[in-house]
Image (cartoon, rainbow, N blue to C red):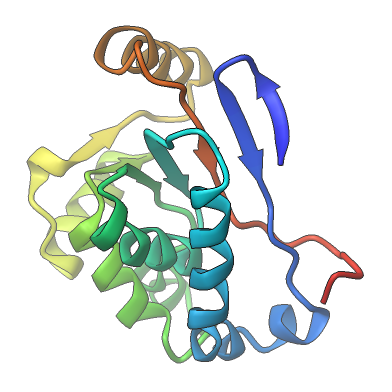
Length: 171
């Protein structure tokens, strides 16, 4: 766990190179990650926010939220709809299934473009009210979340939770 700011911790779980290469293994071993994440949550101050960025950690965040009721924001990056429309293979046979679950369960979805918002509504049946289009403007993105942190949940320690790939000998 890395303390990034006084109110935000960043948590990483390492992925084995084989799981990065064959991402079906991520879904197949989801229970392994859920146990690790539940352990992290139980040993830290209360989490008030999970921000996921990848199809699989969006899925895990949604699963974790069934039990913990932590506000979940998911930023859309390389969705299965985008990949297929661009002629690329999905990262996993489970990617679309996990996206459907994550997008349905997330409290807020962050989209870069209006076209992506429309795609989320049409391809995944996500209600428009659940999607925030932020563009590529970092200042707007930062300001939006700064206001959330300091107005809506200012009395609670805030944490940013992501599972990212990292070469680590713990695996």
